[in-house]
Length: 183
Ligand code: PRP
Image: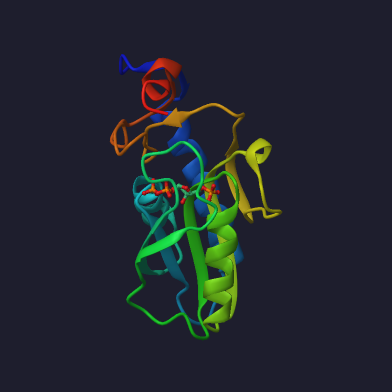
């Protein structure tokens, strides 16, 4: 385990088991779709979850990417997620599957839902790897959440602290001394 972590929360195997459940849930939900849903990866945090999820799904999907940022180098949400890079595809009339790594304050998910529904999507389904309900500032819930976590600073499998630790193949709690040095 990486030496900056206090403890392991999920192994790669535990994550992959849940990815299978999330993919099966989506396959069932879109079994009768007449056109392929558009799966949107909210970069950067959801990159690995997104890749594993869409590769596990049986349903044909199209892929698009959006870069959204609200934390910068801080551990607190700015409350106003910034769209750093927008989608390439139109969501007009599409079934959209938004893939997030974590729903924390909830601002990003609310913003994404407003944006995508405002652009005329036919349906909006949000899937998240992690849900941190204790940190919610706005009332919102993903349609499918893989793991509920407490108010601990977790990194790995896409989740970062100051752009580090994303490529760890597991998820763990970051030692407090690492982020208290800066904040
Ligand atoms: C993180 C995470 C979610 C969002 C959730 O993104 O990936 O998109 O914050 O937080 P919220 O519920 O409080 O809005 P971040 O802005 O850190 O960018 P990143 O994906 O590049 O890490």
